[in-house]
Length: 158
Image (cartoon, rainbow, N blue to C red; front, side):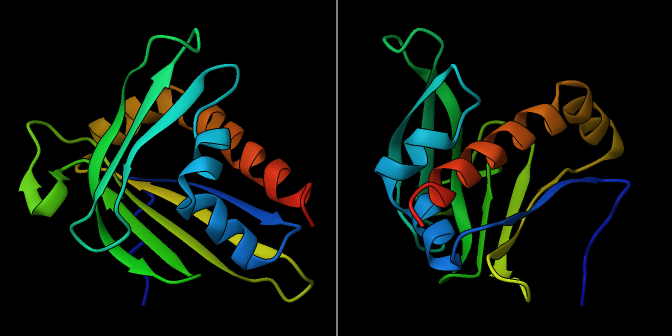
């Protein structure tokens, strides 16, 4: 069963030439996530990564590598080992409502029949206006860049 809504969702897909556990680890190890989660040359700091439903997901971004500000502040809704992560900025840790929200992200990874990992990152939005705004803000460039950085990181270690 699929819940894709092209009128509300934006998606980046890629076949990553690395095992699924390597892709999963790049998402779930704070030291690895910090290496690829924001488009270069910006840098990322993982403030909280509590991999459980209701667990905090908070990252910070820096343009100069010194001063960090908010990037993502949210919580995990679903964590399926080696297969799926769902997080939202509509909630913060322990299911507390966030002051504002913009996106729910669904990250999936599966073994690809030709080897490697079939990877998809979908940003779900509350309405078409938010979807369109995210697209205009550079969703495909930004999420495409970090997906490329993720692939480069895990493919270089296999």
